[in-house]
Image (tube, rainbow, N blue to C red; front, side):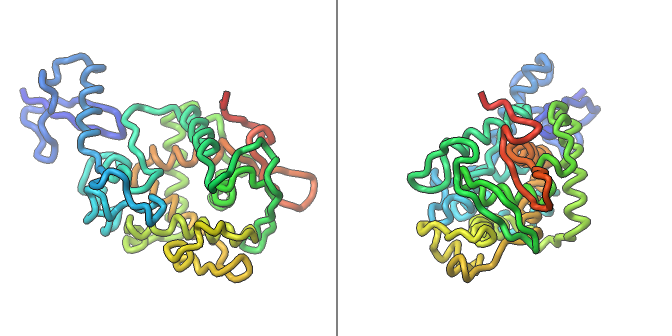
Length: 318
């Protein structure tokens, strides 16, 4: 009896066949699959991690603010193809295959707690901030801002500059608390991933993204322009260090008075990229977004986005 192993969504599963399936590699464990399930799982995770993509220059591409490292990546050619086609050829997590193609695409081989990972992401972004010299000083300590987003005025506080992007990103996807997401499902990883899959299907049903829409290199190249267009929607001047052609040309940004605001479709395409790279990854994105902010009812017709302790659910940041 020959044994074959397949890695599916970071969970190792051994199957027994009379012969290895033609599309499955033989088990790569030195001692075969006779080891304990835990040992098997660890060995297979290490084996898959070795197959992950990597940077060929060790650092990535600073000209894109490390938001598109395809130029210096081991999967450079596949970056230029539709994500759907690439993933159909490889039974591996997309964040592994395209690991480090952007600073936020980083493969984690172990099973994750969405609650804990979302909290860690919030703290990490708070610590690193987004602009030179910026320091997080606490909730609602940043300047007030009003997003003009597709005909609606949305009020918020910009406590850290990445809020400019993430507030509207979450709102546009319906991933704020108060927009119908059951946050309790985060405690059940399978249920949370299933919800993410439903949301991904809804996005595709609404926007019908083509294969040409989902070429990884092009989607990654839009992340910084999305930030610029979010600044435009907030009527806040784009920081001077970001006013470079890589950012301003694709975003049509000249000044806060002469710019193109972000659209739901562009936000949706960014998230749908993560759907195509694996529902665990889109589920993590959704967990982060819903954990950090909520849509508040202030008793008026105004829309307001609150953060953390202002919301019904507060992530475990301590």
